[in-house]
Image (cartoon, rainbow, N blue to C red):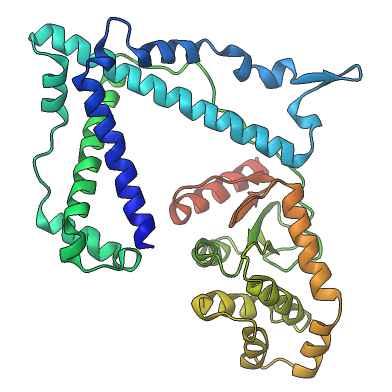
Length: 362
């Protein structure tokens, strides 16, 4: 975890340092800045934005659009389009910053490098902010504060510098009535075959949330907690389905998942599911039987189920469905057939469910 944290810091600092180096070399402030040219080029890249309307390709005399493709291909095409959309937006933002800095430099008579350093300079970070960051991320950092403090300070300085850059860009956009002239790609709607898998909520609900998860995935554990709250919040109108997608190489996730199938046969799936996530760090192959005993299951029936082909086939079916849909990581959430891409699950998921409910009722 500490290594990943350091990589984040190094990556963020590298981006800022590279920006400063480019500024110092006037690369961003030439007569025709590279990023301005890139932004203009991307703005004129109409074929991608119009690909779905105009068709993707022809084969055997048939014209294909994205909806003619397999579900996994639709997801891959959408992700590629989303990446391109974000690249265009970012290039345009950087171009706007470049042009604004050049304008201010002409007006002030200062050099662009000098002006940029003045605008984005952050002298220091208060110890209180460093301490707060450390306390909030202590588990992931796993190092004494005195050892990691300089890196945290640099990371927070970079964040503050980035905030100043974003604020400048937003001010320019607001003052100039900025309007983006290309649309964000629309996520494909796919059919998820979730029949026969454990669910909570009304069986005939108009809004269905399907979760593909791995019992050893930390993000899946967090998602499980959030989804539980959302399920309670919309218990009369939301159906939540759990489908296994064991990708951990240890094989323990698959073993636990197979045990969940057998717990489901005794009406204890959700209790087994919650307990397995709760003890995630301590899971091992033997945990399957331990969980069953803890939940008071009929152990003879449980062992007989585990020895049968049923759990293996059920887990394999769930995983195959995820692969068909293009799932390549966990957790993967599908809301009424649309794969969600949320950055703050706790804040955004309830809003997405509310939106889907309004659409279903409208």
